[in-house]
Image 1 (tube, rainbow, N blue to C red):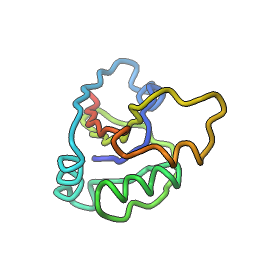
Image 2 (cartoon, one colour):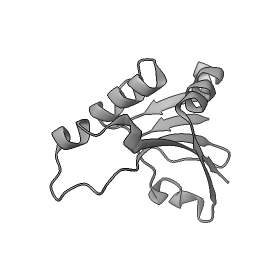
Image 3 (cartoon, rainbow, N blue to C red):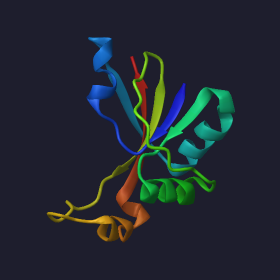
Length: 114
């Protein structure tokens, strides 16, 4: 299964007892191609914040819906994560601060659960 997610937590694989995560930084184009080339019944968007869904939509060039759900990944799953990689957010940074961050401060990562 391929997932879109705005975050990754090791608690999402804790049920596996022992697992590895392979991470690769990819471009927006590579993320878009991977998403579009995966059959719709084999992909799932689990983007838990409206602002993150809006940024995914803008960067991928297609509508990605806000969908706040819990995911437990399985071995063999892939996850496309949109990770903030800019300067450290100030204490108490709110939605306005995050929304004002340029797209260049974000990067796509492809994770594979092993």
